[in-house]
Length: 345
Image (cartoon, rainbow, N blue to C red; front, side, top):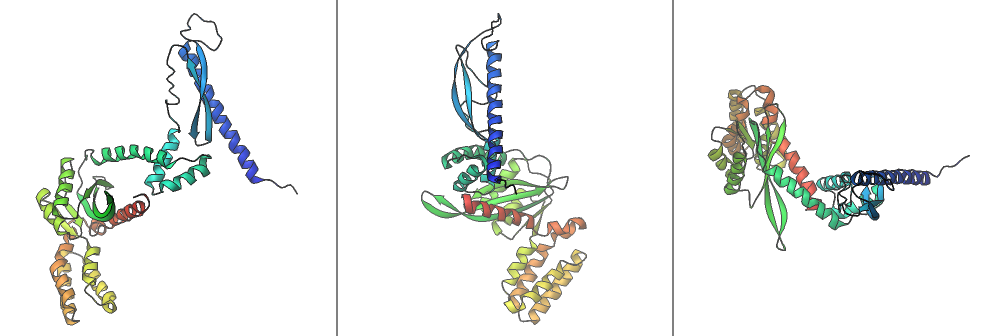
């Protein structure tokens, strides 16, 4: 039987691809030098404007691996290649892949191993950090770009993270807003850092959104963060406020013994299974009486006080209800933020 050394074959194919890329790029550089000179190498021509003065070697990381480029030198004209930028050490697609890895939550140290496995060369942590400076510029530009169109529904929430401040690790709140545009698609509208999730932090965030052009807001879904609700009335007084039903369920169930939590959860969900707001309020009153009969006075008080805050979504089209009564879409985004920052800071 014939045995095939798959690793050797794969290595040979990789080398063929790499050498082909190297040969092609060097051919393009030579052709560009001929164009700048106005004539080919050793060609006698009245249109010649310059001559070759040798070449120098440069290394370039590509998806096919590291290639050696022979960059032509000219006697008088500067050789400004449109193929390879001066001082560039990596193909743009490689740089984009490195930045994508960072955004996906791959640690800088881990990037070294991945680049060696993919392209046969290791990219140093300092090189990745330098590339990420480009990302920060793009992110800052995105954070401050104008918000175009109107967004009838928005969801607001904050997530607490650890941040290093001058050698100390402190808690910091990251405030996030997503909105539903006129075509029904969700967009991340803004992300900002707040010292804490209080009224002043939310005021600054909402002011930032309004100054960038956020308009047409009819309903805001969030948990009952007092600072948020207070600030919302200042900047979008016409908008209705919807308390996230999932957060409300958690608040009520935190006052209930574990043995009765399943029964109480079913009662709470029955409130939001009603056909309209009037029926839901009636059901909420029945639930309050039943909770008092079960000697769960604290839970009954939470339902009596907060049930009406969770029913604002019923004033909007029925087909939108399941998406409006919670900020689950935002919770999913928050989990991604936690997953990434746990690795890359």
